[in-house]
Image (cartoon, rainbow, N blue to C red):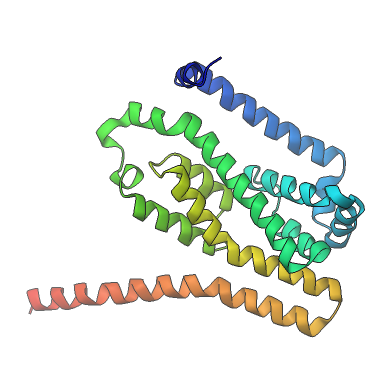
Length: 241
């Protein structure tokens, strides 16, 4: 089957729906398998997860990457413990690399699943009524994705799936995601590496640094909102003496 024929088949709504259902079932099956085999419980136990990763030898990095992909695509699987365990097992350098690669692949996979069914279907249903922000500026959409990656309490997987419903290009999404998750990936892996040393002072400093990095984008957003409102309030006072 040629690539052109494959693209034509994927434009069929029925085939798209079947493909998405198959992907969802595969992810649900993977989650059930992790739960039945005890891997899901191990993920929540940092030292145990580190031991299992190290015990895999050369396959350990592939396990970290695979777990990160699944954690991004399936919400109930937490990604932070995996990142910390990777740092504890391989240090903050290699640990960050494996975490970053897994998170990027998982984000692209989620983006692709949403794009597979969502964007064209939404355009067909709503046409011009679809909000411009969903179809418009590539730079704005890229900035939104990048900013959301810096804030840990914004769901990583939801942003990835939602971005797939927009007009954002693949390469812009990939760059924004990679740049946005690099700081958190480094610090989580660094925290894991420091925890492996067992030195409480170094662990405390690493956690504090992570907290400060987390608060920076929130503080910047708050200040921009505050500064942005001031000219409006002055104009209103001039109009209403």
